[in-house]
Length: 353
Image (cartoon, rainbow, N blue to C red; front, top):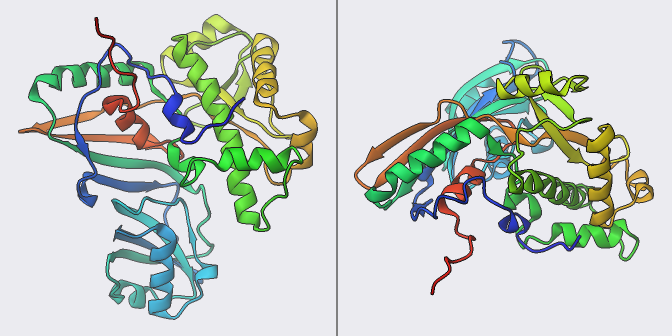
């Protein structure tokens, strides 16, 4: 597999039959709002304090550092469930060890508001998150394209959103996967930083996963159940190989379950039969080997990921030439993939003549 800069830009669209819908996106931070839906709430007692913050113009790490400095706590003891975009209005939970709830509520830091502060027994960890609610505004939309937009959103609701990783997963220059392949295959030295090693290795996994999803989108089989597919329950997250493809397809059509794709690693659970053959071919085409995966199993043990995610009750509000979209996505899925589907800015130009 040849890794490219900005790899997600080569991926097929779910709705190629709908031409790109022109719009301005992220003219202001308010054009991209996101609010976390936590996996659980704070208990009310404990040495850690869960703070629900609203931030503008700051990364999650910068916001946590500034708050810790303001209340005199060590940022290294802080935690969060997910990293949120700088160029947005975001509301999320963080935790700070040893802080006073009152001190956090009263803390004044530019770009940050502390909305709640409640004690809890443990540090907030990455992934302790159920979902994210989004409100996205697209400006200067041609009113004549609103019906096309409604058709596009209906297709996404019916088929699900391809669970592609967004471009931010691949680094500022989009070359993290390229850099990682060099040291994973022994052609270069790995980064000294454990964080960078993990970040770059995850870019390889994400790029290969995106190709898996792309194959399904290209063949119009995003929600199709193949023999041997590893299915995942949307409610509980349970994994299983469907013994009866027809029954599994009925459950997938009802959005109880969906197929998964590989985040390759030495400890990843493999599908069976036809599905395993496809994934083994995908791994071979990537240039990775089982030996390479085994060598880096602590860094990237591997897992499974939904190839599609539901976007039910996708709200659309039109005011003059501004469109507001309201929707919820499971944790780990990218709202920018829905925006990409609408704008199609990397789509080839229409043929003429």
